[in-house]
Image (tube, rainbow over all chains, first blue to last red; front, side, top):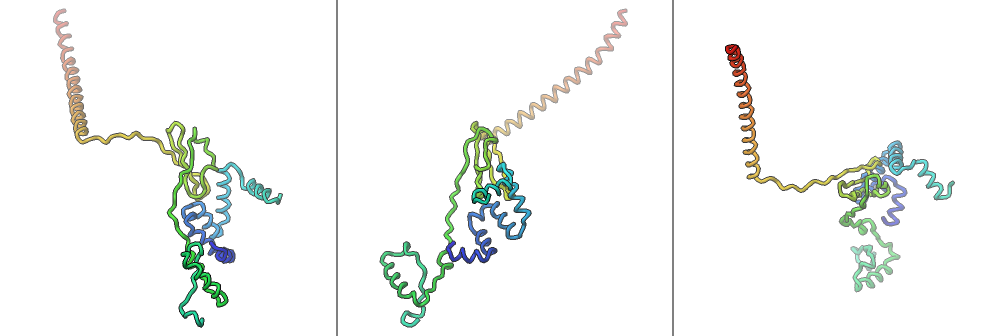
Length: 76
Length: 163
């Protein structure tokens, strides 16, 4: 993606998602495909559930991950 | 565009991919052309190059399934292979689209030779004979029980006569 395309995509999120979906790396990744589909359809509950599943598998919680990110960027 | 020909369209070309002989000429033309609205067409020139995917195997030998950490499983859609140290099982782990880890366990199977036709026939014949012998044996046992049944009353009768 060149800078022009990146700028265009920032002003057009659906197009950006389509572009991501066409990326061979994402096309072969069921997890990423599901995330993009849920984002496109506005399925917030599904995204939340997925975040909880991943956190649970990794032995942590969504809140803990969120706090870690905030701490990393100096918000806490 | 007067003086440059009507059908001249300046293509975008990466200087690194250009022919060394061609490059200075093109550069000169580009610099000369710039004031007259160059027509760059990024979308048509810069097509994403689809390279054949080289699949790498991730994973390691583990003493048991409990020793596998979720961070070892790639989130790029691939799988990770974890053979047990004693090679009794291989755990294949990947992330589901729901965000959970899917595990498939492979167990070894001995490489057995397929049975030949002759062996099959031999087996069938031996099975058939075994069955026949079993039938004959069971019939003989039946006969012996019936014969012993016939003999018992006659003995009693002889006993009575002797008394």
